[in-house]
Length: 139
Image (tube, rainbow, N blue to C red):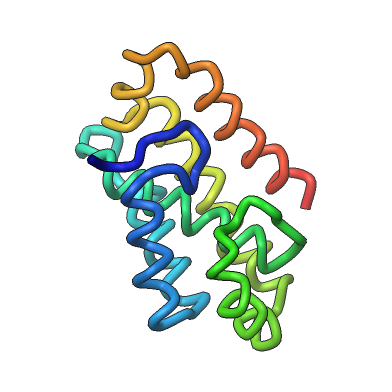
């Protein structure tokens, strides 16, 4: 049985992305993943798996600029190593604009949004997405 919860790291796709990312952590990979959603044409399909991976990538990018207690404990060592090699200004200038576009796309036009809309936890999921956007906008 798969994991499914309204918080970003409560689903299989996000956990899979963390595992993949831990093997080869790089800001370039975060940017590539986030751009996969932010640059997708409105008419193109954004499936739930990719959307979940993008949300995980956005949370990781945020955690490179500030403390984020929502990340899985087993990922913190990798994050610490990547933080020492990362310029937070680069994240804010080169990733955050795409992250905001990706968040908008995910919450308004994605399979993940459609799936959550069918549940009782839709409002909580939407709140999680909006909280992430607010964090980025404050940077």
